Image (cartoon, rainbow, N blue to C red; front, side, top):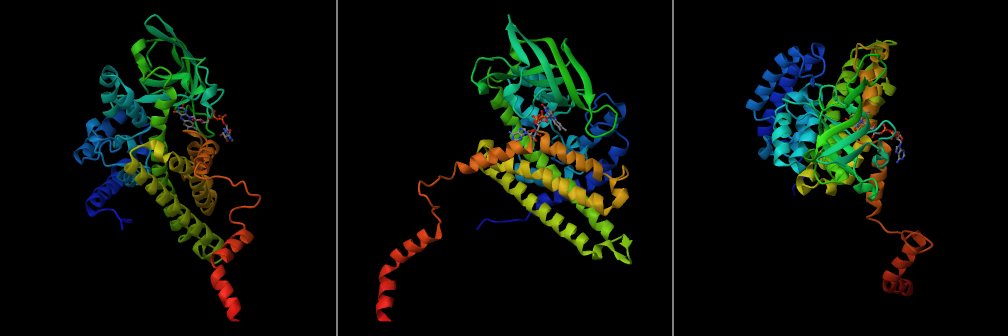
Length: 431
Ligand SMILES: Cc1cc2nc3c(=O)[nH]c(=O)nc-3n(C[C@H](O)[C@H](O)[C@H](O)COP(=O)(O)OP(=O)(O)OC[C@H]3O[C@@H](n4cnc5c(N)ncnc54)[C@H](O)[C@@H]3O)c2cc1C
């Protein structure tokens, strides 16, 4: 009987330390630092590396990785419990060495990279001495990678890349771009693309602009990147030619579930804020907490968060059990599909409960509402993941040739009469 919903005390001690460390040392950084990915910022370089050293000393560095790559090999369930804390701050994942998209990019270089590629890129990425971007989506289409047109052509010993990529997060801070490109346009759709490692300082790489999420006019961190006659040596291909989709799937499975783990942290914070507010604010002579429509918001939010958390933890447990993302594709896609709704619902309720303060830029709720759409889009839109879930589920079912369903009551009743015919007939005869 192995159902157990408790954390062992030894690991709980680590989580308790993390909780305090994130609250006291990391959460305040958002008010004094810009992007945690900006390695060129002297203030950032003064504040983040000492915290990273502290994390390494505590054996909590890069916990998404196995010991062979400098991680702890804790597995996904423990990582989920950690991410439930780290998700509270945009600066926490980088302090703990498990930030996206570097984590996923490092994972595919570890998996598919040659020794030379690993020596050049993997170690600096794992040590956060280098920042990377993942450049897959194109301006004319993201949900369907089969429409991508960015093209690489072999010219002697070099690949020449031409095309445009859209929303390459952190491209402005990155020195390495992991780019998915068409190399074999006449091959079957899923064998047309290959993955490349492109140093950003390669001539021909240009950031057209840095797009921001939300409504402000300021620069953002999602690169609209143009590749014009970008030449990289042949050995900058990551994995086999035509294997781009396979490489992409290797990184996206982990990325999606890690986003979900961090989302738990965010919705829990909003929930705590909501509870504090309803117990502090009075209207019409009573606390908001005493209004039944407000109580409904609290109850619905709590239940949604608990359901979501258990779903994420169970999926993490399955990843640890099967050690193969393909076996949990349905679960990860379903988690990915429900995540933005939980995020949006809880943040919308928290915003509403805080009234005008809630919608203002003096609280984080409106940013959270917009960020829920980030979670709905990045790594594939909700609709596409729902399609994956439905397709996978329906593989486990079969239709019936009968006119009526197999569970049609008259049919079941007839079967039951036949099964118990002898007893029924005996009873009838006796009466
Ligand atoms: C904050 C953020 C960060 C991102 N970071 C990166 C990154 O680092 N690298 C990168 O390469 N990309 C990144 N992306 C891009 C992301 O992967 C794409 O936004 C996503 O794949 C959707 O592509 P699209 O935006 O082109 O939307 P489209 O493909 O134009 O789709 C638009 C909408 O159509 C609907 N839709 C699409 N397909 C279907 C379908 N089959 N059935 C029903 N409805 C459908 C959905 O509602 C979808 O939102 C990021 C996106 C965001 C928002």
